[in-house]
Length: 152
Image (cartoon, rainbow, N blue to C red; front, side, top):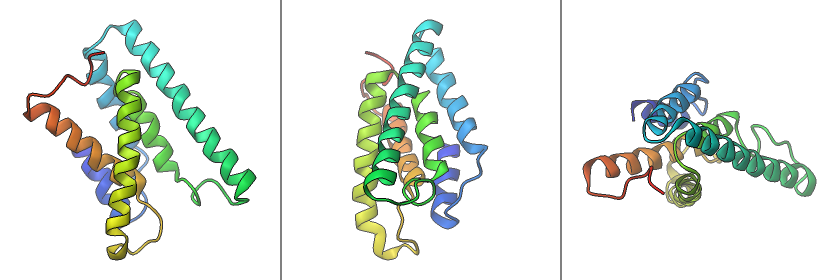
C-alpha cells in the first residue's frame, strides 16, 4: 500500500514516477500471489497476464499510430502506466487480474472526469489512479469479510 501511495503521490504531483517503484510493486504483489498459489500456477498466471497486458499495449499502439497518427509513448500512454500494468499482472490469478484491470480502468476514467478541473494537466494520471483503486481493493479485502482475491 505504501508503494501504491508513493506512485499516486508522484504521478499526481510530478507526472513522473521513479521507475524503481514499479518493479518493487511487482515484486511485493507477486510475492503475495506466489504465497497464495503453487509455483507452477503462479508462473502460468504471470505469463498469461503478461501476454494479456502485451496484447492491450499492442492494440493501443496500433490504434494510436495507425488511426490517430500520434506518438504513442508519453502521448497516449506513459511508460509508468505500462510498467504498472505489468506489475499488476504479477499480482493476481488471471480472472481476478482481468476483472481488477478492467474495473481499475473504469475507476480511473470516472475519477479523472470528476477531478480534471482541479488538476494542472490535461492527461490522465493513470498509474496513480489505478494505484488508488488497487489500494482500496486490497484494504477492503484485508479489513472486511470479502472473497479471497487469490481463489478461482
